[in-house]
Image 1: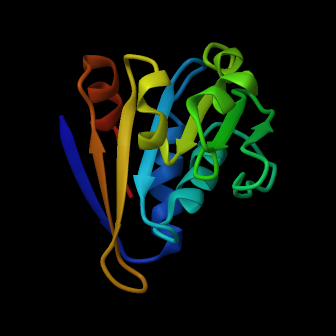
Image 2 (image 1 turned 135 degrees about the vertical axis):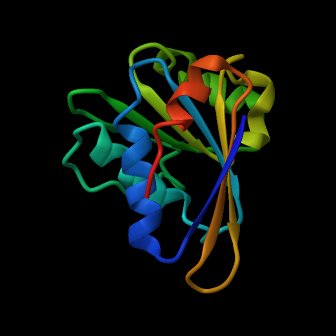
Length: 151
């Protein structure tokens, strides 16, 4: 299933993330792709709000993984700076797959390590404010979540 949304500002991008976040449970894996500044972290802030997390979500570009506790815990990962798959394995990537919702930015860089069932979301910059956000699912599980999305 493919679903495409166009957002007109950061607030709408975050709201779309919140809509998805409300449907997620431990073990769900969200793989984000798209250019720098396309809205991936803003979207993840929304996911965190949808999960009931009150912490301020920041980009894990330099820390690789930021953990957030809440009713449903979130592991926000950014693998942009990794040089190898081994680096991700060495920081305990597998330990996050069951007990957290995992949101990974630049996930296409480590495709080989990802679980089989992943929701892919691609962010495209249309102009300074507008974004096209494309959701791609190959599973009935994520298809059902996509049917619930709204801005």
